[in-house]
Length: 189
Image (cartoon, rainbow, N blue to C red; front, side, top):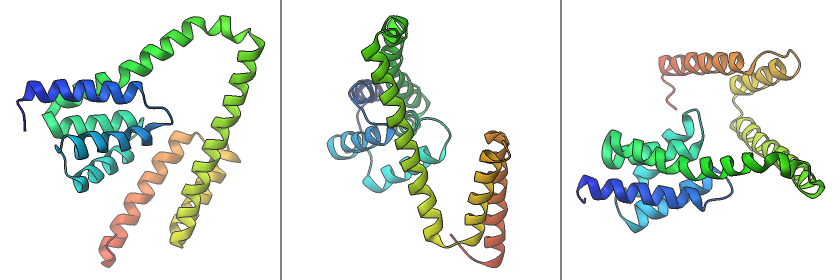
C-alpha cells in the first residue's frame, strides 16, 4: 500500500467524487466504493468489503456515511475514517444548503410545488417497498419469534402510538435475548 498521506488524499477525493455524483441512495455509493477500492485500487478484498458493508448496514445512520467510515478506517485508521466522513458529507451539505437558501422562492412556484409533492409520493413508495421487502424476508425465514416481534413492533407504533425509539430498543433487547437462547441451545446463526 502507498504512504498514508497518498492514501488519505485518494480516500478523500474518491469519496468526495462518489458522494457528489451518486444519486439513488446509499446502496448506490456502496457499490461504487466497491468498484473504486476493490476493483480499481485493489486496497480491499471483495469478501472484506462485504464484511465492511455489513457493519455499515447494521449501524445507525446513513449507509453512505457508515460505509465511508468503515472503508476509511480500514484503509488509514482514524484519520482515514475522518477523511472519508468529511469528503462524503461535503457534497450533500453544499447541495442541501443551496436548496434551502432558495427554498422559499421555489416553494411558492406552482411547478416546483407540484414537483415536491410528486417527490413526497415517490419517497413514500420507496419506503413502502423497503418495508415490504424486509417484512417478506422475515416471513420467508418462517421463524415465529421474528414474525411475532415484527407484528408486535408494527402494532405498537401504528395502533398504540408508542415512540419508535422505545420499539427499536425493545427489539434490540429481544434480539439479544434470542441470540443468547439460541447459543445456549446450540443453535448457531
